[in-house]
Amino acid sequence: MPDPSPATPPPRRAHVVSDLPSRARKGLKIERLLNLDQHFGAGDPPFRLLDVGTGAGGISHYFARHPRLRCQVDAVDTQDSRLVTDGYAFRLVSGTALPFADAAF
Image (cartoon, rainbow, N blue to C red; front, side, top):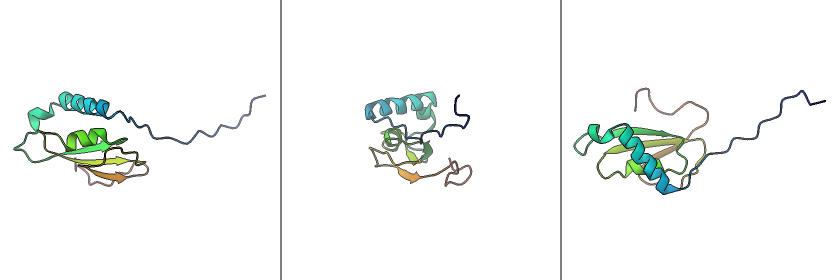
């Protein structure tokens, strides 16, 4: 007879894509889907971007170091698995509450 008690789920592990060139391609895809180059150029105030689930940090880095867009990037994740750390602000979080004011992004 099967055990009627529910099995304890395994602990959650971070999903990190460590292939940084693929993260740059994903950043470009996001940029194009949102037409960011049409809205936020060099003469405009910085575009404030929030990266939830930063992983390796490749997409945050892509936008923070973008040659044409001026982006101020904040990144959050439940674990620090970053391979790229420069150019953006990072905070560890737990749960779903984010440490930013409403309408900050």
